[in-house]
Length: 232
Image (cartoon, rainbow, N blue to C red; front, side, top):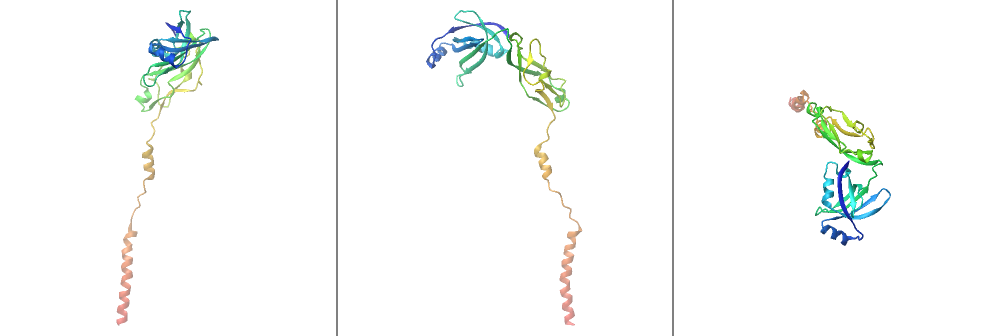
């Protein structure tokens, strides 16, 4: 998205770690501008101004102007940046020149809102599969984001990339059937299912066990009868 912002940068001829450290101490950050068939230009730029753009609604998809040493403004986009993991200071910025007449490839964020019917009334689970989609368009047609209303989404239904509204020169780069969000059925507790399957079958005990003592008594009574017969 084109923004009415112009950032002044200063050209730099010396490079290296010492030069980069000196720039950061002075409140600037080393940067480079390249693209559109022109030679790359090393420069120093305000990290505060760059952060404002990165934190804006359009983020790194913002197109703004940069002037180097008071020269003509050039439209650019931030394509790469590096922060210090400890101090969070900006270490370097890469900016690409933009030809406003040529199509570009960008990744656009997808924002969802509303409570789906499939969750509220049908007990389903909302899964956000993709939080951004890649499109191709002219620089002036880059959208800030895609917004999806989920109120009418029911269980086992999905919103796919092909359902996003493309306007102007916008064209999908990702596969049209790519799922953005869907409502899935709740899964059974795997442990409960396993426990039910492993539960031992109850064995019924009947009269068979009760007859065992009787057989034992009969066997003990037989020798006693034989002894009486011998005495006679």
